[in-house]
Length: 258
Image (cartoon, rainbow, N blue to C red; front, side):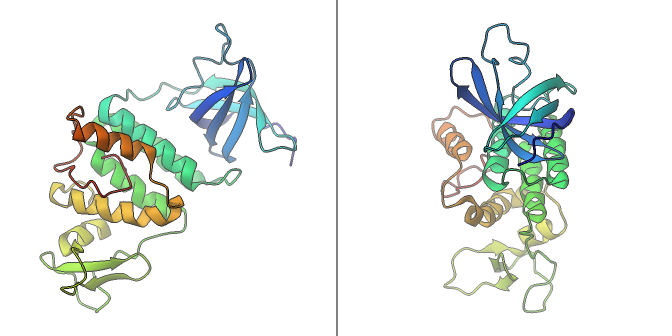
C-alpha cells in the first residue's frame, strides 16, 4: 500500500474507539480516499489538540500516512467549518447515516458523489422533518452504490401506475400489479412519489420507509442496524418525540430510525 501522505483532504469522523493507552482508532469518510481507519496517536490525552476535533458530524481537513497494514496514521487535522446543530431525532438520524456509510462502503474506495450527498444530508437534518431527508439519502445512496431501484411511472405490465392500486415491487425489475395472495405490497401513490423524487408527501412516508429499508437490507449482511433498533426501543417506551413520521408503528422494519 502506498506511503504517500495526502495533504489536508475534506472528511468526517464516522466513529472512533480507544486504542492502547492514549490513542484512538478513527473511522473517517474522506472525499478523495473514501473510508479509512486511522490511528490518532495521543488523542485521548486530556490536553490533546485533536481531542475536540475528532467528533462525528464536524467537517474536517485531514492528512494521514498509509503503511502496509489495514490502518493508517492520522498526521494532521483541522476544522473545516462548524458542525450542524443536531439534537433529538436529527442527532439519531446523523448516527444512522454514519452507520449506513460504515456498513455499505468499503475501505479505500472513494465515491465523491456519496461524500457530497452525505455532507448535504447532514446540513439538511436540523432544518425540518428528518424523514424526507433520510428517504432521499437512502434512495441516492443506493443509486451511488450501483443498486439503483427501477422506479418508474409505468409498471412492468406497461400500464401507468394507478395511485389507488397496489403493487408488488421487485428491486431488480420494478412494479407489478399485486395479486391477492402476495401480501400488502405498495400503493401506486408511493411508487409514483419515489419515481418523481417527491420525498415530502406525508401520506406515503410509512410505505416509502418500508420499501427503502427492504431495498437496503440485502446489502447489510443480514444484520439489523443498531441505530434503527435504538430508535424503535425509544418509540415503544414513549421516550422519543418524533418530528419525522406521521406513523412510526412499523416494528418489522430493519432499516432506518425514522
